Length: 280
Image (tube, rainbow, N blue to C red; front, side):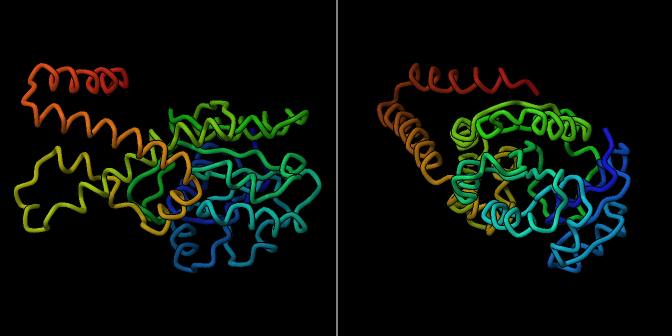
């Protein structure tokens, strides 16, 4: 698969990695970046992730066959609406947002008629910015394509799915509601828990912290503004996930208070069984 031109809106870690992967795998002859931050554009250009960069959305999307939106989730719908008048009739849109139902709701009742295939590559890092972008970031990682909005236009879904697969990922089909419910547990809750553990830790205790603390709290180093937008965009599923976690932690507390060793072993075994199923 090869596009003559793709445009990446939002040239941070994910956007920069899309550009690097597209160039390394010859997925696009020309990659244009759109970002209001000139430092992001400069860094992405110097790393070879872009052929050209501009802060102007209309200029940046003009002539592109595919527009990949890598902004915070609350900006995806406005970018699509603003860019639509400036692209050709066959241009497609996709994104890398961590939530989906809210984006579709923000697009309005005609969302299914738009040339937009919602996507979420499950790849990233606690680091941010194009200086941390990698051409292999998507290698072997799943990318969720939201199937509930495809309707009869399956061809555009296939094209966008092949694009993400050409970057090294593997496509997984889900509805927007299922995606948001599952990711609330597998991605959003872990970030909240990591931040909570880090938040109750005094900085002068860090000198005696070990690998367990580092592993559990790694994602807490992520961009707070970005994650606040994700939590608010997926509020109901995240609240449900927090309720489940709170109940699980309450069970642990009850077992500990009762001095129930056998119960604690079983509680820990249940968690270990799920983690072991993940593999390395």
